[in-house]
Image 1 (cartoon, rainbow, N blue to C red):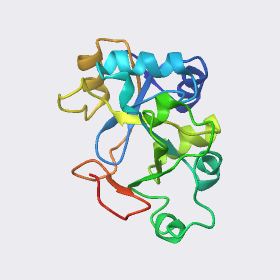
Image 2 (cartoon, rainbow, N blue to C red; image 1 turned 135 degrees about the vertical axis):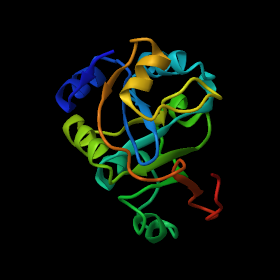
Image 3 (spheres, rainbow, N blue to C red; image 1 turned 45 degrees about the vertical axis):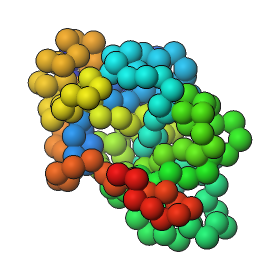
Length: 182
């Protein structure tokens, strides 16, 4: 494992690799959500079923608008009032969002983060990336690059940084119902 900077993280995302980075509560794993081989690689290192779908994280609302039904919807204001910030919303997906992102559903989970490392990566990358906790499925998530190396045995490079201060993963809400999912 190497500790990498944002420029190298973007290079790896573009090359179909999996990276790790700090989020609001724990370290996350990310990859290019529109590269099926990259997503398969992420699910392989995480030992997670491929059918589950993923959360996309972005630096701005503009980065996610091509993938979600938001503008003009009754839930638009509720969603926009929490972004950027530590809130993940399950929103209707637009046509063309891949099944490996949605888990075969007609919705997609999206967070526009205000975490500086995520902001820097997504701004430099120019699009959203996958955000899932950096752990082997059902194990505790990593809290540092040292733990990333211990868990993933040098397979995943890590962007070092401070966690965002939450003591549990971001909330997930269904935009249509307002129901708390996590």
